Amino acid sequence: MAAVGTVFAHYIKFPGFEKVPAGLAALKDPAAVVAFLILFPLAGFVEIVYWKDDLSKEPGSFGDPAGWARWAGVKYDEGMRNREINNGRMAMISILGIMLAEFVTGKDGVQQFGLP
Image (cartoon, rainbow, N blue to C red):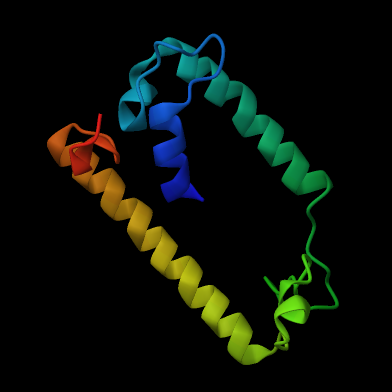
């Protein structure tokens, strides 16, 4: 989602944020800082109040809430959970690579490919 967000932020701007640059450069813009200071506590509140772990399950085990494994005809077992964890790890490495490249080059994730 973070990698898709870098592309989304490059091409689509919300009303009032048209002049906010994409990528890490947004951290220097006052409008983006205000939006972050509003969204961060809001997200924290939602996690604390609504998205609680089920104490009867193993930590981080949310099962298959969307029912995709059932639809695909596979079982959500330990092997599937390990693949999902590994996919999350790869996604974290991916976004860190995008951010590091942007820090070094000054170009956001889309500009690094030479796209407008």
